[in-house]
Image (cartoon, rainbow, N blue to C red):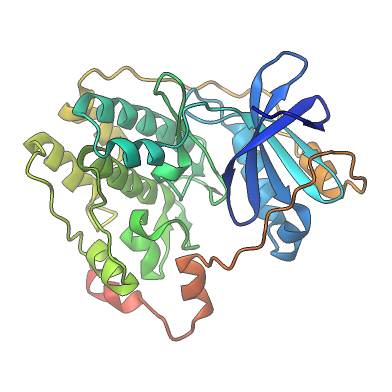
Length: 330
């Protein structure tokens, strides 16, 4: 495994994931021998990119959520140059990797994963948390094939039925109303993303997948997709109710749970009431730390990657709202 570097009581090992501002490493808690995952963020990059509030929100959100299908956060550690989020380690990897290897899943396995996804998202929504970036890369599988939702970096904490305005997420999974440059409800947007994931689980490919961003958004805005021939009528019916481009007519989570296809072999996974008070003292201390006591000192390389929504936001000439004007009266 190659454990060597120390971070307090943790022996840090290999890198298991890497992004623009962070990398994730597996580690061992030397007090009990348990594996953990440590998300390592470059403090200077976070501060220079004005992401401190976003990181704090992600930590606060993860502390608030206690559900068997959501990754748990254990603690936050800071040094002079890094922020370390110590989290539950999930051994099975990303759902995206499984889909890449196995292509489509058989119906029973796809339904089990979808059950757990809906249970986790429903739990989040009842606590006013909207993920806003649901996709297979952010869905992990444990050694028994159970789902764990991760990466709440783009999540929003909002009152039910109130409107959000920030367009975010991954283009192929994003709901039409997010790219219409108007307010949207977080719950309906997450439901749409769940529908895209269900389609992908059952088919092995995305319902909307175009290299041209404008063409992609046009297809999303009118729900132009074709189901493969092996989809059953019950599968088609459920997906069509989820992938309704009008968020007011889109099926809700409670209606998904009542669906006949969904109900087959359904065993709800219940979350826990979080009685403990949510403190941000550790993340504030982490950001204020001025000593570098950790031996884990690698810094993620900077990246030129720009999110599609960031590109739109930076360009005054790239206005996609016209794609959706005909739906304003829906």
